[in-house]
Image: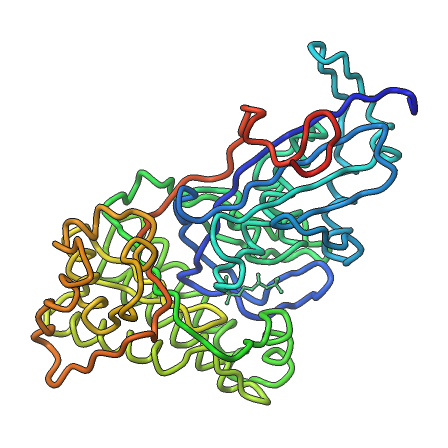
Length: 416
Ligand code: DP6
């Protein structure tokens, strides 16, 4: 086999997701088994996704990976677990066009090259590991002709990063915590696809932050060891909330959905505060965003927007429809205008048509926005938000069959 020079490539694209009922706390650190079920919404990959190309060739002498163009080590346990689990499920591959034949048993000896790229800044703290591990596992499964369904693949992606298992599907997704010790029943299932509730519009405020946050992995370990509130949450609160959330999603009941989403985000951050030493993920800007949404929702008499925050200060705001999203964007831009030298095109990214609906075509239109009536003495502060991303619920992983989209060179198997 060593003299052969072929390279087989597969490229996939996988979305990121945001939990509306949070995963926080593991009952098994190695297998990544959670202490409760969680539910997420998948974000449109057009605006936030990972693209990964995986390659195999008899000429590769070791497994290698490049993330956003820079080579990184694959020696970590999480990568190794995903690679081992997928290799164990590899099957025969035959590509007649390229004259490639790989027998099931060959996969143990063959090495892999992986190149991965996020279409959003990794540093923004937008669940890049979720999309990343989901994409790695999905792409490897296709490369190695593994026959597993996406739910089965989610149980492998879970071993890379817990939240990654929910990125194997579009729409709304539930990660079932499972009961067995080997984790085989801890996997993701799709509740509804992205078309089921397509009124929803999502605006993410990427909040400026100077401090380096505690990683989710470390944070949740400390919480499990020290917080009594977590036990109450996992055993008493979340099981009931999961049932109510599934019902709210299925019946597109925005009022219940928003109430549950906000309450669960706030409880997750309360559990962080109940950790020793306490963990602070939200900052003053996050708190101001919450208060702006709460006041507006109250003044309308029925929720227009839900908010949720992960392990960082960024706000993910889910608006009930386009009209609410347009009003929300106007309010957000009133409170958090850009610095004077900012380009409007890079301050609001993603689906820019919402910006147009909001009547904003230039920076001067932001300066001219009227203060939201529900808040007296509204303060404006430049620079507290780095930028906004307008998006929506989106689809699950796909294969990109066009080789020009591959991140690895089809002849050498090295980054292009
Ligand atoms: C706050 O999946 O990043 O985003 O399993 O240790 O890799 P590991 O943690 P990770 O935790 C995500 C936590 C969260 C809530 C959520 O996504 O459910």
